[in-house]
Length: 409
Image (tube, rainbow, N blue to C red; front, side, top):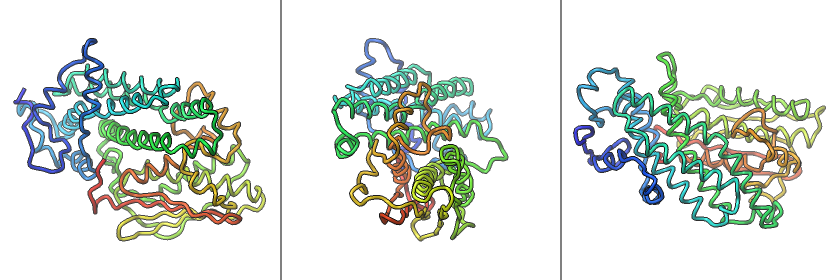
C-alpha cells in the first residue's frame, strides 16, 4: 500500500498531501457493527485545509509531483486523467470527514432532532458517509469512473438540503411557539444554522469542482468551477435577466437595472457564487421597488463595480423604500422575511424542492440574505447592507482577490 502514495509533510498547505496512515484508514470499508463508531471517529477528525489557489493549481496539473500513484499507471494516462485521479483520491479521503462532521453536529443538538425535516437531512449525510466509506479508493481509471458515479449520486441526494433545512427551521419555530421576530432572536439556533450552511458550501464546492473537471472540454475557459477571468459585468447581465424574469412573473413588470463603474474588470473567482449573491440582492431590490412605487413609475436599480486594492466591490442600490432600523440586524436571521407569509407556506408544502431555481418565488423564504452573506464570507469577503428607511437600500458585496491571498476552507 505504501507504493500507492508518497508521504509529504514539507508544505504547510496540506491539500492533496496524502499520508500513508490516512490512505490505509480510508481503504477500510464500513461494517454494520462499527458504523456508528466510524461516524463518530470521522466526526472528530480534523478537516484538511484547502485553498482556492491549490484548487486552481491542482486542476491545471501543477501539483502532480505531489501525487505518486503507481508510476506505470501514471505513465499510461494523459494529464487530465492524472488530475482526476488525484482529485478523486483526495475526495475519497476528505469527504467522509466533512460528511461525518455535518451529521454529528446536527445530531448533537437535541433541538434540531425534534424536527423531522432536519432528521431527514441528517440521514442524508449518514447515507452519503456510508456510501463513500464502502467505495473503493479510485486508484485507476475504472475505479475513478465508478467513484464519480457515487459522487454524482451524493451531489443529487443533497440538492434540496437548503429548502429542507428551511422546512426544519419553520417546524422548530412552530414547536417553540415563536413568531418570526422571536425566532430571529434565537442566537444559538441562528449560529448553528449559519455554521451548518457555511460548512455545506465547502462540501458542495469540492464536489462541484471535481464534477466540473470531469465534464470540462478543451475549449472551456473555466478551471472546474473557477473562472480565471470572471467578469462581474457579464455575470450581472445574466443575473439581471433571471431576476427580471422572476419579478415579471410575480408582479407583471420589473424595474430597469443599469451597470456602472469597472465594466471591463476580470478576476479569478467562482462565477456561480457571484451570481447567487447578486440574484438575492436584485430579487429584494426589485420587489421593494415594485411594492414601493408600483409598476408605472419605477426608478432604476443601479449596480456599481469597483476595483479596490484588496477587494472587488459590487454595490446594488435601489430606491425601494428602505428597511426599518429595528429590522436591520434581523435581516441576517434565517426565516426572517417581510414578504407575504403565504409564499413561505406554499414553499414548505412543495414536494419536489431544489435549492436554487428561477421557478422559486421572488421572496418569502427568509434565507436569501444570510446564505448570500455566507457565500461572500466563505472566501474571505463580506456582504453588508446600509438602508435609509423612506428612501432605499445600498448593498455591498466584497469579493477578495483570490490570487493575492491565501483563502482556506
